View 1 (tube, rainbow, N blue to C red):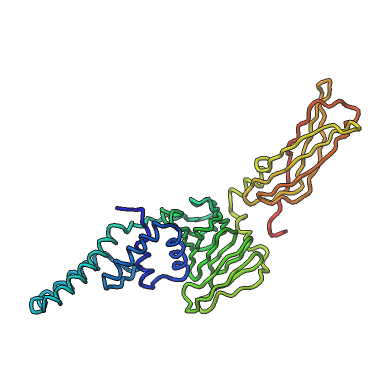
View 2 (spheres, rainbow, N blue to C red):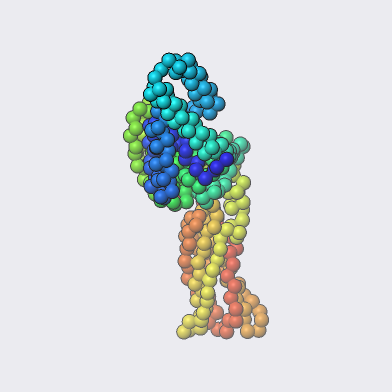
Length: 361
């Protein structure tokens, strides 16, 4: 089976007008992305126009369509004998076109294998093949095709998830929930299904939101600090987000977060340099990098141990009170009171740190 052209099924839906707006935009991007794709689109269009049929790809059953084609040919066979050569020739062309298109779909349609990830009793964190990071709330499920990232980046969400999307301007990242589509190029956002509908809240960047079921095909662009709500009868409706703790669920019932809280030394990287100034005081300049996924550290205690000429050591402690977000770097500068010592060596290490909830920011 030829797996290099996974868009033949969508090309058929594209030509018949059966794609929704996000899918149609995705196909437009795919067609324009290379000369090879444009060539394949032209071939599909030619086959489509010659076949004289319209297929609904979403519900296509290859065996059923083949039986319909055979039945159609059989029903017409008795009348063919009484028709003119021209009419017989016309039906042969139509049948040949249908058969050609059916064969093309049969050969080129890959069987789409789906990968499912479920969060049962606790929060699950993982990376998609394109390095997009995903948190799934307990009881939620995410599905994506095995060839994710090759031609598109589409996932289906049931429940609640938080996404940090890896940027890719040629392949938009699309999340399909029960009532809404979210389309992004690279950003961070939370999307949740509840009894009312779907709520999407943006942490960074911007997200285009549209409704799955509503006849209203309106789209809204939601930016950081805003949210959009889609219900069965209305949406999307955009507003300012007043719920500060919308993503704090990632901190509960999450073993990875508990490890970050209990082991700040493992997630705070410290880089430093030191030198004596003009009055013989050691000046330490350093950087603290937070490599945790969720934990926000503050009141970081650093121990500076310096070695004297006689080999003895002394330790001085100081505190960095800045709040250090995941992925953030904080610079610091400290002086030691070693004016009367010809310091030989200094080592600065993280001793401890406090963790604060994102709801307290």
